[in-house]
Image (cartoon, rainbow, N blue to C red; front, side, top):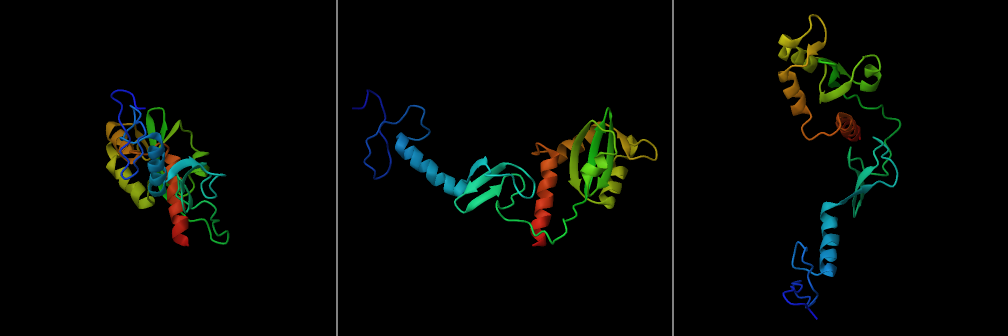
Length: 188
């Protein structure tokens, strides 16, 4: 029996008669809400832990689809093994390293190795690019540059540029991993 003022399930053609929870987002009983959620997962995927780390970027976060898993960071199909005979793709990046109130703007294809030789407090951002992009950034921020170096005052224009590069990016390293994964996928 349904209590006073309770709403009945409106599942089309189900003739369910089940009671709808007050907090339900739709006028469906628990059973029909669960069926709708299962249907939605087929189209939207479910974010969950991968069975083991991604073979490309090492992330544990994945999206489970009916057709299989994708890494949530680099979108590599879980279980696919990169061809070991192919050379690792080169992805050049312009990096922004903060040390105190200064920023180093440089370029590298191997940030971890490069950063080991540079004193810094924080990796602010990466952007795809080679020496030409680095030179363009040095020219763009020339008024804030320490003479004949790659170091700059952490000025408002630089802060704004770094914020633009980091929009929607929680960790700059994840962005670099995605670019490498894309380059690896493009290799075949």
